[in-house]
Image (cartoon, rainbow over all chains, first blue to last red; front, side, top):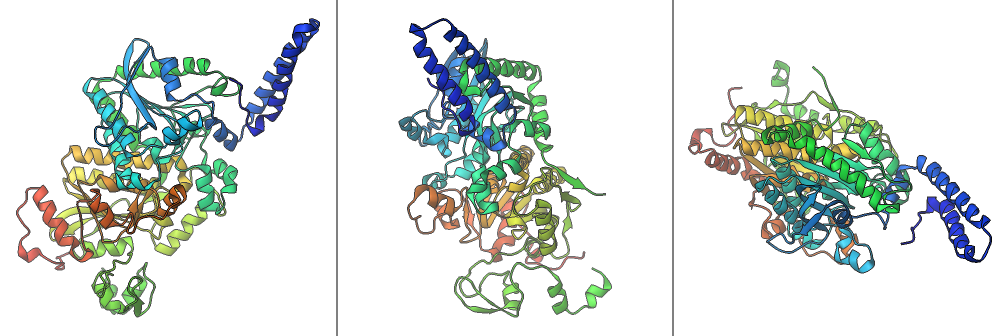
Length: 320
Length: 297
């Protein structure tokens, strides 16, 4: 698969195109073309390192939304030795914007739940661009309860623009479905590790993200509203998305500084989409590490600690 | 109440209070255009006597008219907002806060009072919509959590009147986390078997509707209130078709099973306390305690 480059990656794209070109002519020419390719590849790596060392929050948002970024089912495939997808909320439908199922990570049985975007147009439509409806959240809740009943730790992958704003979703209680998950996740008696793998968009994200450990991939974002949404409300113009992304502090690095994230997982050079396998290995080892630590805590204490962690969110002052 | 306030003519007193309805002797009902005498409207809890339109009212007025007179004691008043992100759009968040504080007389968008209704001890909180659209940031979340803590400790029911656009953008992820924080607090309240009644008033949308507002043991709304996750404008832009008549109004939600009932503001005190007494297995209210008799306090 050819890498799709973002606008700020253009210098890298040009270099890579040149390398590709050279690879094709190399068959019938002298040896020193190989050296030239090696030299250009080193230069490309260097260029990528320097561009990626100074990304703006908006550029990181673009990376978080990269169409080649690994999604939940990619990770399920690469991280888990088994994954048995389970479908449906038992009430209305099977929402394909959220997937979940029984899985094994290492030797450990878990319940895996995550948002799922589509790769091509047809798939995107089928998965509603990763924007769940109430039945998606209710399916997730059903799987969480199943996990609790059988003592399976819960791993959730967050990657959505947000919950779907549609007529049917409202009719079937989008608000209630999200709220119910927040409520129930706070009192589950099994360990919960949540990972923001791409876009953590608003209530639609946190509805599967109440957890004991919150991890973020290096180029993922997490906030209360998209930069475009924020810009159109506060600046009255969606064009101010760069400024909004800056102001909201939505990057993993910034949120980690603010104490809202437990661990930031470094991505391969150029972003997770450049190397799904390497990304999955890092993610897998981080998940296993956190689950091992959480499993040592008795269920009631685990729940109490989670409640404390959630109750501590917020910055305010208090006078005598 | 000081001696000075006691002797002060009531006309002066009412003018001192902050209001969401514009000042003036006469008010036009925004629904039926009837011209209404302010004093009469105030007695009627800002419900139009002609068409029963429920006008928006401020948090403190709401709570003062809901609780038995003089029983309210504020919880969390000393919790005040910060600006952790040094957020700035066309204006600085700090300036927006200062402006909202000046305009409303409140420090943030949620007011919590412990008090009595028809003699029943309870905690009531209300969102101040004029404070940055009643948006939920860290202070709202913390005050709500303190309200829950108080209810668990004293085994008193909690009632929340929401009037809000959702989570507060200027506190970004901190605001989003308040959805988890308020919901987690309500989960503890539920485990303690203490009732929570959510009363949704116009409007209740976004991150608040998708957390504490929809988590009532009883979900109640005032008539014709706008209630939903996404605002109608966003939905309109997404689906690109005209929205059904009465979409996202209380009556629509009742029909779709999201609410237990719609209650007229003028019947709120009696209806809520009657149901709370059943949930708490208390005998019915003694007739003497009925409608807003000033208590000894």
